[in-house]
Image (cartoon, rainbow, N blue to C red; front, side, top):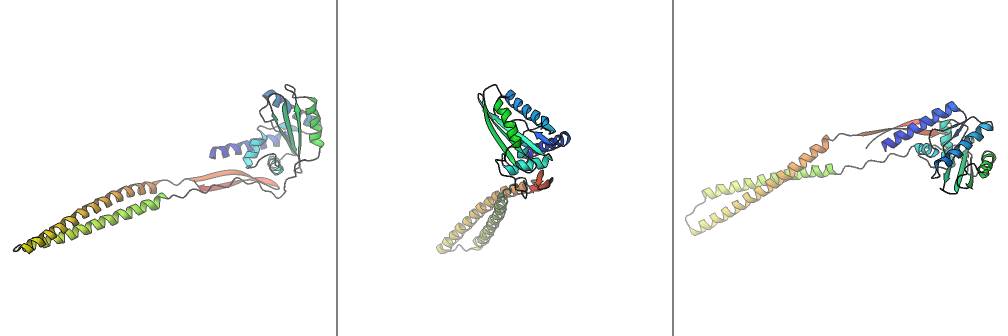
Length: 280
């Protein structure tokens, strides 16, 4: 995404520099899946017609769709076309598509200084991009009524919103593991202490009668049980706490990355750049 944004900004800058130097009309290369010679011939026809009828035209360095993508909008929306025109600082932009490997469908568009977008369409025979039908489209494209609504003059085409980074749910779980492991170890130590106290009673217990011997055996069983469970709790707590501590330290040492993006912003009476800073 970062690479795509950088390339898009470079594309817009290249188009703007070229348009500012060449004149008031920018002719974008024809797009579509028609053969390259067909698309090139239509682009050349657009450029020639503009220059022969009082305009100073130049061919843009990139396609209109790439320019629109750099602004985060979609053609042939009139607001999007006007945003690109305003950014380039030209009086008009002419662009289009040529689709079809046999008979070719040609769609031509023109956005003028008032934000009005005119659209004309025709179909030409295979191998004849300069068919008379195309020639008839050109004066209609320049002199016809707008067929796509004018752009809203208050519209601001802003870069796409930055996606909120997903929250890290591992850290609370790891902290719980560290605390839980410590609690298990404390319980184990407590059981050991209880077993030690029972051992003191065993050492001082009388063994004169059968009842004394039975009481002694009970104390020994209780001491063994406390010692065994103390071992289990302590070892389990040590294992859980150690693993959780390792991954928690690793998580805390992970560097925090910031995303810095410089994106174009088109406004009603000019253009500018926005600096966006956020966490990945």
